[in-house]
Length: 273
Ligand code: NAP
Ligand code: GCO
Image (tube, rainbow, N blue to C red; front, side, top):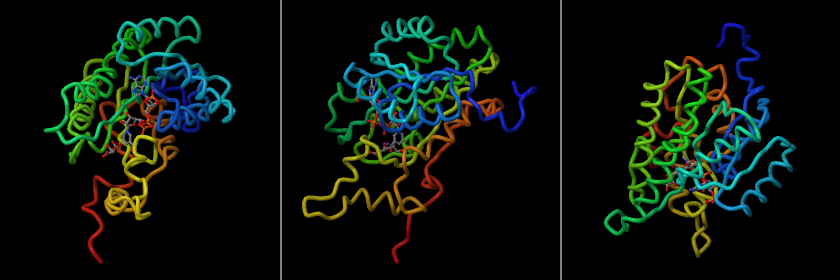
């Protein structure tokens, strides 16, 4: 609670253990780095293969982060997630902060998308945040304190061609965020969303690749025209907003989606010159 904290300490994560799902690279890794810089006691992350964990541990070590703990776990596997929570309690300690970051996208016109593809996106981007949050909530309820941050998207608010499953999942994740807020706020648990704009990560790399003739990808130009700053955002620009949502500075913020989009949602798009 904020009663005995001053402004300087409000954004500190000292003494807190943070689990960022899928934080081997991209946005998750950027958030985990920011948490470490904000003083987090331990950084916990997971991936679907030991190879990914080993590679990520090298990245954490290169950043001087010595308190990173990587575990092999597919976030859609409810049994594995519950077992991992117990293992984290034994090997690391309590989970104070959970960031549901792990996610995929499939860019296929809906009428051509196979049901299995649609389902896989829903399972990872919407069902998994439910699975992981449900596994972590009991300890947060008992402790009467916890932070859950769901990584939403522009597609929590907007649609576009070929991303029907992703938009459905991220729209659902916005409402799951609001419902966790509603159901668990009485336990002093805050659940908010972080809504990145268009971020330069492996997930969006296909949208930025130069064309065979060396020209700019049309989507690259499109997004820069839709962003007031005229550029893609970098993963590290999400760090400080993520620290805010994980810290006592946001104890009175609940059920909100904090969009870190460079202004995309406010902007009709650059007018033709
Ligand atoms: P990314 O570079 O593709 O990284 C996604 C991470 O999630 C990877 O580490 C991936 O591991 C992991 N993951 C995927 N499915 C998993 C599963 N079933 N179990 C465990 N880990 C799994 O994506 P990103 O751009 O950093 O995006 C991270 C989050 O931000 C996602 O939820 C995405 O929807 C969201 N987001 C991204 C943007 C953007 O512009 N990049 C904007 C808004 C929101 P593997 O290597 O094993 O696949
Ligand atoms: C896409 C992009 C977006 C971003 C992000 C935007 O194909 O439109 O991948 O979905 O990943 O979610 O906020």
